Amino acid sequence: MAIVRFLRRRQWVSIGASIILGLILLTAGLGKILNPGQPVGIAFNPFSGFLATYLDQIVHVNLPRVEVLVGALLLFGIAARLMAAVAGAMTLGYAANNAFLLSQGRGYEPCSCLGAIDRLIGAQLSTRGSLTIDIIMLILALVIIPGYRQDFLDMNPWFVRSKAPKDS
Image (cartoon, rainbow, N blue to C red; front, side, top):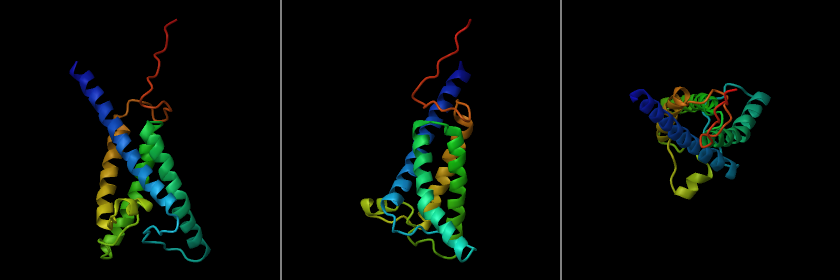
């Protein structure tokens, strides 16, 4: 009986982590989409010329869309374990970027991580604050991946119960 209670709690903790991580990514992605002219603080680009322009296009245009998609799927629990792995990989990139900025002494500069949301809340998130959120996001992803009861690619939302197979 204690194992069943533990598994139920673990499932609900994973669902809560998925909702929180989804909301963070959805907020950040929508904020960047709603404010397309605001640069995102990407610190390190070793390329120059055409490749640098292409990478900027990927980061500034497509990454917010990916954040919104992954955030929405996490919010509803669709392929939650896979999306948590994708979110974890993206968050590792964000954390590496913020750690690089911190090493350059730019820890208190605004990171522009939330785009238009920064204006709505009337505050700017610093690079140091952004790194803290990145660490929290990584922890949430690490809670979701082993804790979700569905399969890795399960497309059923968390609020829809899957039907048990009927015995013949």
